[in-house]
Amino acid sequence: VLSAPTSPLFVKKTATHTSAELGDFEEYTVTVANRGSTASPDVAMQDTLPRGFIYVPGTTRVNGVKVNDPVGGKGPYLTLGLGNLDANKEVKVQYRVQIGPNALNGDG
Image (cartoon, rainbow, N blue to C red):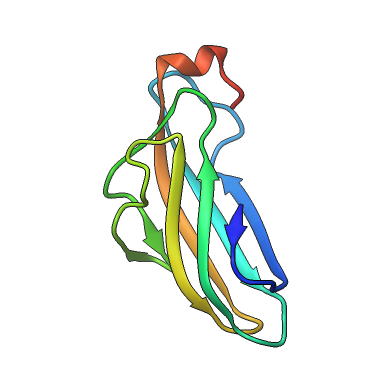
């Protein structure tokens, strides 16, 4: 989910693995693209981790550059401000999660 004042934003979330076991680590990549003809100000990415997935502190990167952790601690609700996103540009947000015991009854 993204928040930005009325602009055509595209979001794609991918994971490095198609299956995993308890205790494994998974890396997510979220691509946020502005498909519009004007800049989108104050873009923020909001992600809800699947039940039992725990954000690993210190692992967030934006376009390959390490940034501060998102708001939300270990999850499940993470929010990361991305600032202004120029027209026809995209950013890639990457972060790691660990699959915890509560994932057995989860939605991941």
